[in-house]
Image 1 (cartoon, rainbow over the protein chains, first blue to last red):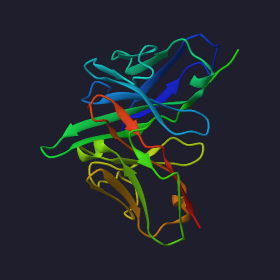
Image 2: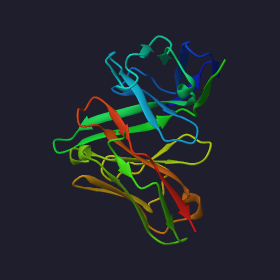
Image 3: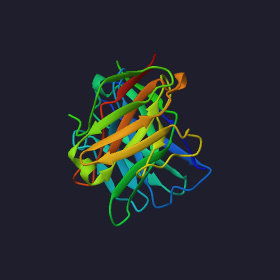
Image 4: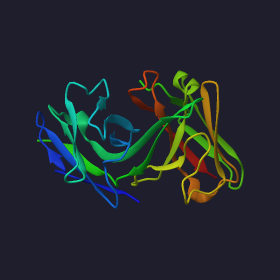
Length: 125
Length: 108
């Protein structure tokens, strides 16, 4: 069973770039899945950031689209998140996850079945 | 604002049945997925693809969809079920993902 582990700086300065990596172990990221980033500000709910398909297609949260980029490195079996021009509002726990999306001729389904443990990123000078 | 709406908080007596709901137009096309999150922990998947439970999730958890409303039912709630529960699906465009605001479940 694949496991995911986030890594990256825990502190980023305002106006800087937040860069995180999610390393997959126990399985390959070259599968028919979406590889996803989700964040959770302190005391708040979950917010979808964006996703990348194993073939390289990406989708991003409209509210973050101008600042976010997600990439895939199959050789390292990992995917990454870059979020630029950060402010205090970007302070959150950031999670990576594996997502599946499919259609069975009657309904569409989407779920995130594997999650990393999360990493806390604080934006502060 | 979220395209999926959940009640902020629900309570249930120990051993009783509780239903947590999620409303949104996208649920007419997408079956909702449900996650449980306990303090300081990552979310875990509890119900997906209609009414499937991952390995390790007790069978007291079940899910259903009707029209624009999805429900997570816990039959015989246990103290360890006290947590935040989030619903999730793709949005109406099919290219974005949405979460409900979360429901805090208290087991009395």
